[in-house]
Each structure stands twice: as C-alpha cells, then as structure tokens.
Image (cartoon, rainbow, N blue to C red):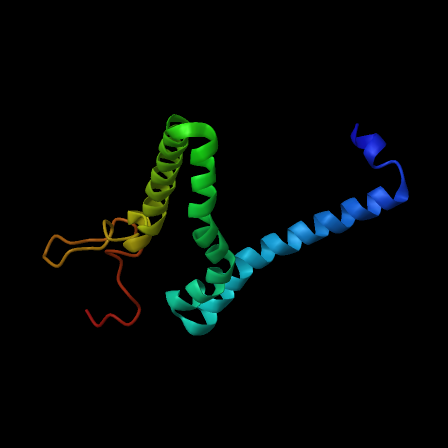
Length: 137
C-alpha cells in the first residue's frame, strides 16, 4: 500500500516535503524554548515562546469539550477525563523525578573524602605513607 502511494514522482515529492516540514517543526518546538532560556535565563521567556502555540488549545478547549459533552454524553466525557488525569499524573510524576538531580551527581566523592583526624587516610591514594621528595622529615 505504501509502495503504491509513493509510486509516482509527485507523491514522493509531497511525502519528502511533508517529512521535512514535520522534522523542522519538531526541532523548532525543542530548540526555540531552549534558545529562549539560554539567551534570557528566565522561564518567562520559555512561556513567551510556547504561549502562541498553546493558547488556541486553551481557548478552544472548553468549546470543543462542550460539543463532545453534547455528542457523547456525560459518561463518555468522564471516562475521557479520567484517562487524561491519569496520563497527566504520570507525566507529572516522571517530570518531578527528572527535576531532582541524582545523589551521585550532587556529591560524587563525598563518601571517599577523608575526614579530619589522626586515623584519616585516603584508601585510593597510592602515595600515602611514602616519603615525598620535598618532605624535610
């Protein structure tokens, strides 16, 4: 079926143009907020970049929701809302896990740091206990 759809040259050109357009849109959706945050150092810059893309969904969402309520009834809309809430909770949980840096990145060598005291030594130091060249003693 795909071979038949891409059999003629205009279909292949259309598919290539559409694939290039989708790739460019996806890269822009990632790169523009990163560029805004890098340039201005503020989350409000990211909001200003993403707001024109998200605003139509926020404005038109209640209108489309009302039309869905009229068409599918209250039970269908409740099932849809329950699925959406579960999905958003999953996304929020994964996002909160991704925001906190792992412990090994915060203090990677904290366990190996020698403590002050007479018995403190570094088990990973091969030169410990050997005389140094500039050691007067």
